[in-house]
Length: 607
Ligand code: ARG
Image (cartoon, rainbow, N blue to C red):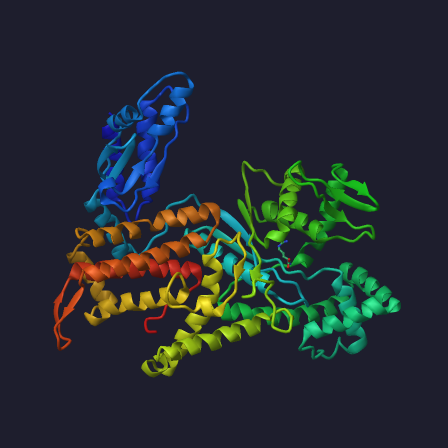
């Protein structure tokens, strides 16, 4: 009976397939059915599916459940042979068009061999339907990323948040989630008191004449100096904060002027890196903060502490949030409490993601615990993630600084990237082969691509060393290597005179060849696309996608070295074209493109 049901289900699926199915998910379901049927006496038996190693003898995937199940029996005093358990699993395994055959090996591994016709069919969906996202239950997600502070500089930490956040947002959008990309800028802190007071002194007619502040950081430094040295000024600065926070119109105007200067600076970076964000800074939550503080107070959740009002999270976090300062003002903590409430209750999102440096981990874990305590966050309904990341180091392995010890301005960093990228292209003689426009496009693709990719390809929990020389290398797991690999792949179909339209036509007549060992290897890597996205969606580590495209590029190279696609004679004329392989080449390019898009890399056809 089992067998028949499995067959029917999978047959239905196959005939209606418009996208590649997640292999891991399908195998998991299949083996889950088999294992539950084989061992009804075990509750939630372990279903362990893994990719097989490189040796074709061991199949393509494995089910390694027999050993842990034998252990479970052993613990209850029953001695069983895992190989027998593996056989029992196979006896209960429904048939599925994905699986050609299974074999038991070693102590009780089940080697799974995928069916070639199934793989061909699955991969071929992309010619008709494009590269489709895996099927996941739709969610509404808010992602809080980038979030620099007004009047202070946007530093490399914000650059990491920007790059990682953008990629996660693109991934969420690709799987068709409703995504809110929020820039939680620091636009409401006490620093505005001194900035406004200084603005009033320096530009007394600021209400009528736009003050020409071009260097907001210098302006910030000046006001900070006065704040630290002049008690009179300090008093006025405090008064200004109070007036601003009670929305006094002239102070709001001054505040807007200052924010505008920063906003324009931030936008320049976002434009260059192709980043999209909705600005919704701390100021947005002022009224809501007043309200939530009252609510927390009434619920008896706040504690007096030397004039401050604090709130404790749970046992796992031993630093409380400061909800009200001793002077009655609000803090970063209080606006984050208001923000999480606004997000879950007003925006009604199912999932909130914060992309912020690891230094703020405690803040966020305490915030989540407090939100739970206050009945705002319900883990049965909501998912919240703190996506932390390590610091960026200079090549000297110390905190990333300029040679004179100043922190590095992001605009300068991007300019430097452009310069280095051009050097690299010239070194390869590309300035002679490309038109000026093509060269410019390649330069941007390389410069911004290498900065993003260097960040994304490292496990975000680790610190990483920022080195243009490393990231511009054309070997190894770098953007440059991948962009070149892509242009090479794209040029194969072009030399055989295949336009995208002709390829689509061809895909209707010709089928993907997966008989040669290297073709099969490449096909299987491509087939993993949905699984790699699902994995990243689950743990929010973008480096999985980087490793995956890198693996595609390498596997393609292996394929290309042993399988001709277009054969030319000594005079360069095409004598033979392997049409199926042209299709495989194109499928490779299409999947790489999707990965590039998620990673924010801009592939160019010529480089
Ligand atoms: N502005 C903060 C900083 O520069 C990051 C804000 C992150 N988002 C949040 N909701 N707290 O460190």
